[in-house]
Length: 201
Image (cartoon, rainbow, N blue to C red; front, side, top):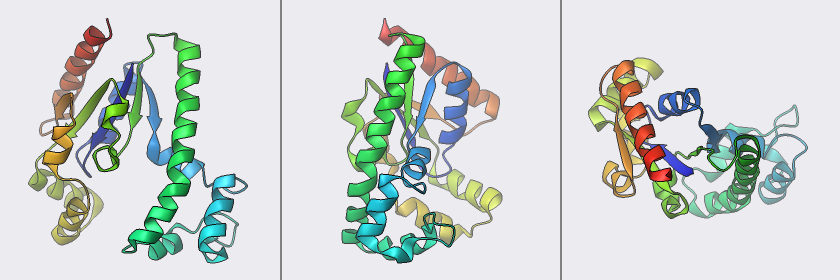
């Protein structure tokens, strides 16, 4: 079963991914793959340099993320060019990991694709189910201020740069409300897993 997992910044999506992994799900982390496909020596990094110039390379030959960020932030065309390089590579690598999960765990494997921008990229239809981790904006702002040291304004700007809660909830098959303790969250994840297993039958 292929499940898409998403949630806004500071919703607790990473914690839910960890709980799903503990329960035996295979996690395909889109952010981690996006870093992997542009490591030194990869065709991905070569394509980024060809498109954006050697100025995006750090002294060690790796990608200088802040330098690349400055080029694409606020420039929709540059960002689209970067996404056209990265996204197909991430999807191809995700498909490889999915195949490996099937080979190892058989057809009953639960493969969870952790995709922060699932609602934004219109990929919800690719999955058997979409799991959205949700918390109100004020709760998420408070988390970013207390755990990341951001100002309330920085936190609100980060939320504003992503899809709205409504847009995410609109693509959800299952919603995991994350406003309580970690134990509350563990119970909610277990309940959703039970429903997913029912659906898989």
